[in-house]
Image (cartoon, rainbow, N blue to C red; front, side, top):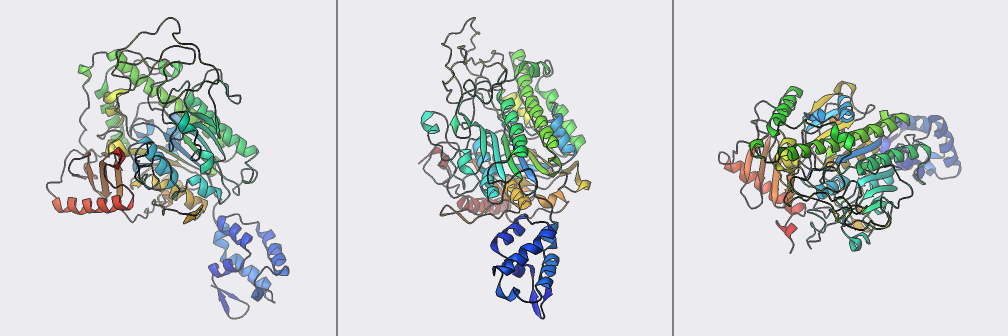
Length: 627
């Protein structure tokens, strides 16, 4: 409270209400002018009668002085950071180096050493639901993407972002942020020409200033389908703005992210201000397709891993468990999860080793791109006040894409006509390369090149999800657990840097955290639509060693696979199967089902899940299959 002009008492909210709207907005959003310039602005407002009449009196000077006392905390708030969210695709919990992996990821490891590693962060077990949840701060069904991109005629399963949600970019734009996106979009259909004709849910229509990437969810790394710059469909051959000597999609995503960072430093988009000062920060969303199938990588990166996986699955899994134990991420009480496949049963071991070599090369290349992004942040002078997140969209992928066909040898000459520069690729798997060679699949087709289309299979997926069980699609820990690296030199307590954060978190927390640090209000209505309230909790308290406020349990559903976690307890079930119960603190590998010992607890938690499912538009259960 501040005594003003006699006996009138004023608190901060009252003082803000008395200010002209434009100045009040500036103070709330952090765009506060220099202290020396505020007094003339208030005096000018008073002279023009834009201040309330009770302030046009002797004592205005004392009011101005008091205003600065009462608003000191606003003015002293840290500069609003730039925000970078990096998402990788179909990567398991222990694949990257700082989470126990043998794959070389020095740039992610460096971010982890100077930041925080969350050990219990969760995604939604599948690619497009994760993207919908991450972008909107809602459960995916609430945003309309409870399954994939098909319209199943239920509110939670319409296959595209709905009008009752807002994206991070849309909310941050309202407080002066410029927003950029590079990579995989996959929250609206894009599998063919008819789907791509509807651009209503493309990035620029959902708050982003610039975009380079793919609308569809998968495709060749050397000739991706549904490739778009801003709102313009293009191909790798007809893009006048980007013609590297050899095209590789992971590089293209990173190169455009770097370009967005550097272009923002030179000339931000109109309406976002100029320069990279805190008044004009940016939000950058980088969604790599690495390491989603197909196994495509550059020869030099593949060669780096030659022979590294010749011993098979179990030695790699055991080494990862030991590193996770030394890091303090794995509790010794957690029993090893059962192996999905035995190396002794593998008939073509050279092929199987090659699959993991290419997979590792995909992640290595992604990390190199992240290194170039970090270098651009350093070069433009903004790294220290840039909040960087790295996470993954689901667990390791056990899908057998390209592993069931009879292999065919590569022909000596092309068997198809070469594609014209303007000819697009559609869907996930192309029939041919741009120069006319057939795209081949099957066990024995050595992956890596543009004319191959193979996934790495169940055995290596089991390695990727170490130390857990379950894969992409499932809501057991292997399907929903993701690393979360958070790096922000100016915003994380120096004492916390390099530490593990063990509090659980979920995708929706990313939106809540972004709005918290940007001091951006979450809307209740937009475009004449009521907006679903935000679900997540800000992670900022964890940056300073405090508890994350969370009012509700964490919950999941995908393809009928369902789960709920409340404290240390988790219930989980495959579709049409009974609930299992696990003590996640003592058994995060989900080896010992305690449902028979605690039926009342299972019943109570099942009721909690049902209430959540009703509220979050999950029902009818099985709605993902259609009416």
